[in-house]
Amino acid sequence: MRNTRVGIEAINLYAGPTYVSVKDMFEARKLDVSRLDNLNMNKKSVGLPCEDAVTYAVNAAKPFIDRLTPEERNRIETVITVTESPVDFGKSLSTYVHDLLGLHPNCRLMEVKQACYAGAGSLQVACAIAASGFSPGSKVLLICTDIARAVARDTYAEPAQAAGAVAMLISDRPVLWEIDPGASGRHSYEVMDVCRPMAELETGDPDLSLLSYLDCLEKSFKEYANHVEGASFRDTFDYLAFHTPFAGMVKGAHRRMMRRMQGAGAAEIEEDFRKRVAPSLHYCTEVGNIYAGTVFLALCGVIASAPLGPSNRVGMFSYGSGCSSEFFSGLVPASARQILDTMDIAGRLSRRVRLDVPRYDEILDLNAEWCFGLKDKTVDRAPFGDLYERFFQGQGLLTLTAIKGFHREYAWS
Image (tube, rainbow, N blue to C red; front, side, top):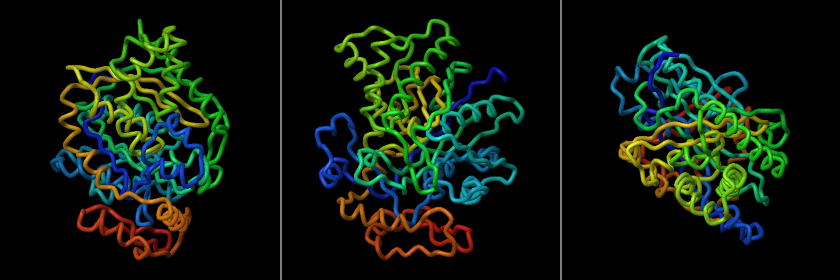
């Protein structure tokens, strides 16, 4: 690999048109409200039947793709989609995304799967492509996109199962985040913690998943430290951005690492969490777990809300059930916030329509009709027409209109 600076040139979130309050859900489901503080989540994004993983991906990428010059757009030579919500066993979502964004045909298209880790793994591949020198100046469009349709109703997992996409442009112009080359530690093994044995079923052992997450965080960081001389969990990183199934899990993981790695006491741990970790939860608590995109949502939270110095090293941890994990790092310049602000992520989140729980349940029932493998079905907007008008109408967002044969058709709102 050449000595080339590479990383994230552009990043954006699309978190859909509606959300439900986590507190409302706890009360309606008669869950133990005292556990809300441990969950530490406020809202979860909810998709509509006129959306799928393709629309989420395109709506996340389009705002920054539209700002590229024709020459810059033509340098996108790879499109990678990462999803647990595919629409075909063979045909990648990236084929639809590439077409709908009007990208150059001189492009490789692919899709990657490894639960919530696949986005971080694909980022490493994208950075290697951008730095390789095989096609100097080429860019990679990487999109993590998921919609939770197989929601585990009436369980404590339900409030965290959300919908969203994070799109990134990876290039030799890393104005938002520059990867630390070679600064990475991995830890992987086979475990049946959380899985999708059927297209519309997410199941598993949440306690085992928590233990696996904690185990992987500690061991992947130790591998990171083996590759980075003098690396310290407490002192090396200005900020930390972890995969966030729910914010309380990240807080517990940070506490465990500070105790084991640094021998820190309660007061030091709390202050360190407030300073270095809490900014990463800025958007995560308002969106929910969007699977492979969540670690990058945490990075966006750091960029948007942390007090940034001239150069800020962010330690990042990605975990995917099954399992694969990685601890890696990169640099965020102070100017990154001004660039990210042009995407107006906060403004777009504020435009979402709040659902009460009965309406949320109606939407879940409608979404259940759009399971994997559908053939010859047209979207009927009538049951959610008010939501469509409030969020989509006239906004130029991509929506699903029909499936003819097995081919999906889309239109701009």
